[in-house]
Length: 317
Image (tube, rainbow, N blue to C red; front, side):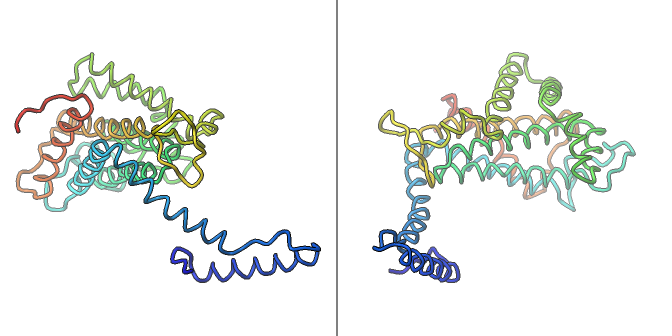
C-alpha cells in the first residue's frame, strides 16, 4: 500500500526505528507479544489527513450560510488592506495627523499590515473546518485583540507613535499595558464609538459584546480547567453525547464560534469606516480601482451580516 501523505525520508526512519524496536523486544520476550506494525502508524497518519476533508464537509453542510458570510468578511478585509496603502492615491491616514511626531514609517503602511493581520480570521475558519473548535476559539481571542487594538492606534497620535516606535518586546509590552489591556482598551473603544456617532443603545450593546468576547475567549488562551476538559471533546450533531475530538471532529459548538467570528469582522468594518470619516475626514478616491471595489464589498458585507444574523430584510429581489 502506498502512503502519499508520508514523506519518504520520514517513512524510512519510522520503518528503521520500528525494526530495531521489534528486534529488541523479541530478545526479551519468549513470544513476540509486542510487535508494532508500520502500517498502524501510516494508517493513523493517513486517517488524520482524511479527517480534515470529512470535517470540512460536515461543517459546510451545517453552517454553509454563516461560513460563506465569514469568507465574504475576509474578502472585505483583504480589499481594505490592499486599498489602504497606495502610492499614487490619497490614503486614509493623512501624514499631517502625526502633528510633527515621527515614528519612521507611514501610518498607512501600518494600517495595511494590521488589517492584513486581522486576516487571521482565516485561521479561525481553517480550524473550524478541521474540527478544531477549541483551537478556533483561542484564535478568536487573538483576533479580538487584533481588531480592538488596530482601531485604537489609528485614533490617537500618541498611542500610534508609541505603538509604531516600539523597538523590542519590552517596549511593546509597556504600550500594551498602558493603552491596550482589558479595562483601558474597553474604555477607549467606547469613546471611539461615541465619536463616530453611534447611538447610546447601540454602544451599550457593542460594549456587552466586546466584554463577553474578551473575557469568555480568554479562558481558551489561558487553558482553564473547564475549557481544557470540555474543549477536548466535540458536541455531536445527532445526540447529546460528547465525543473525544482526537485529530479534530466537527462540533455543534462551532456555531457560536462562527457567530463571534462574523461579529468581530462586522464590528471592525463598521468602526474603521467611522474612524476614516470622523477622525481623518477621509473619502476614498473615486478613481482608485481598488477602493471602487473595497467600498461596495465592505457595505455588502455589513448589510448581508445584518440580514444573516438578525434576519433583516434588505429589500430588492
